[in-house]
Image 1 (spheres, rainbow, N blue to C red):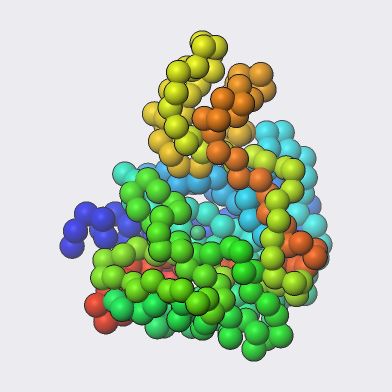
Image 2: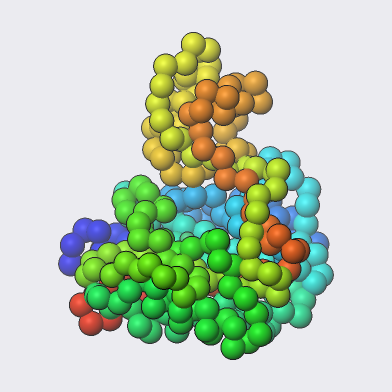
Length: 289
Ligand code: CO
């Protein structure tokens, strides 16, 4: 077995364990930050590293919500929580998401979960990504819901979370043929809204896009530290212990990419389910199922 497959599978084992443990902690009244910190600490204890901050988007927030430092917000009765997280071993990433229901969203969750399972069923070398999108869309629609059309699954490459090919969550015109050995994450989102996300202002997740010369000494040091610790992987603002003046300097210099929270534009509830799989000649090797 080659190194990429071996380490991706091991990362998947660790990820599954962390998510299983974390799931039990998502309860009304519990601080979101407490769960996020638990997840990230357990990852390190088990010998892996976060590939990105754990996302705990709730209700109509679809993606990119992670708590900030000293965040007091708690999970509430009735919430639909998406736990989307990835870990890596030497850059080899496993990425998965589940939905945790603190209310009455079982069908909406089933729609996303069955959509990813139906897509995984047809993964093999030669399958077109548009075919995956078609299966995802029809499964979600069979429950009376809509897929989020502007969020996609993606390829995984060493130290790169969103690599080609992009995997649409609807039957798109243009597809890309999967190739043996590709590592992909399939992540349908289902909603009772119109099926599109837009950004809101809140942003806690960033990644380094480029290294450039910066005059302010502390900002330059911070850039170098981020580069060393995370390379181009996304990180949480709360992981970085510097003042806002220094951090925002990097944003102004265009050194950081921002990942603002994405919410469903009609305020529909959003569910999500995600698996990482390795494409094989005649099927798929499941990393996170
Ligand atoms: Co993903």
